[in-house]
Amino acid sequence: MRHKATRMIRHTASALLLAVSPALAEDGPVGQHAAVNGMQMYYEVSGAGEPLIVLHGAYMSIPSMGQIIPMLAETHRVYALEFQGHGRTEDIDRPITYPALADDVAAFMEAVELPQADVFGYSMGAAAALQLAIRHPEKTDRLALASAAFDETGWQEAFRDFIPRMSPDMLADTPIAEEWRQLAPNPDGFADLAKKLIELEKQPMHWKDEVKALDLPVLIIAGDADVVTLEHSVAMFRLLGGGGMGDMGRPLPESRLAIMPATSHTAVINQPDMLMSFIEPFLGGKTPKGMWD
Image (cartoon, rainbow, N blue to C red; front, side, top):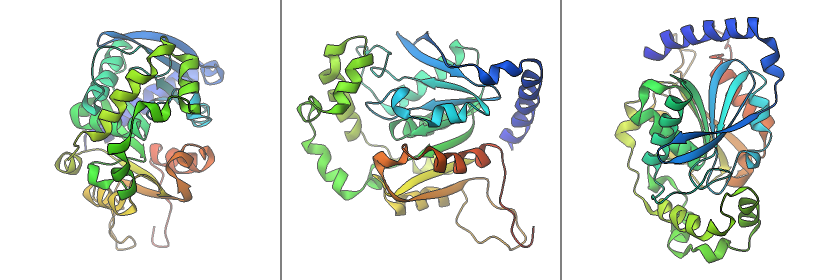
């Protein structure tokens, strides 16, 4: 498969980088902007190793992703991005759509001369990562997706019922808005961003065929009380070749499914130790051994 050969080349290059520049692994994050599709996208680079892009959720920023980014940077060269209108990235006169977010990531990779990378995305960032793999397969190696859906019918019924009632006013005086304003280039622009993100929730997805056609390993992570249903996460896993019985003489599929217990949507990102226990072995291609291995 495509990703096996390219990953071997990347692994060798990363090992050489670590050998000649061990201090990179101890560097703190370096923040800067890149010109991406008509905006100045803010990003931070930290750590050393194989490249890993990290994509945050809606209304979030790099800091609000918590400890998962510095933990990943202990073993990877992490590129943490802030999407259009989020964090220190300016908003522009353009709707926010998953294909557009994916194209922004692809353009960012071109801007920083990053040919290919693993990607970890959470919530909106997970959907953007999925679209990146669909629209730009040559740029993606392994995907780790937390709280992702490939079809809007995969959202919990309670959330789907809530979407038509959503409005910027509901969020205007919340901690979400207050945190957003602390980093925003335009602190008065929250209502405009909220309108775009509410419209994003209403957009059809219907990516089943595209997900089934993916030729790369995918780690699906979800809370057992997440915004995405358990059935939908299992359905995605089966589309990627998972869900069969092991110990039958055949290798396990490269894609994986992990369910976090007693975990709501917003609690997913607040458990970095558990996330790392799923993400790190997956990115390293490590598989637990069974009795017959």
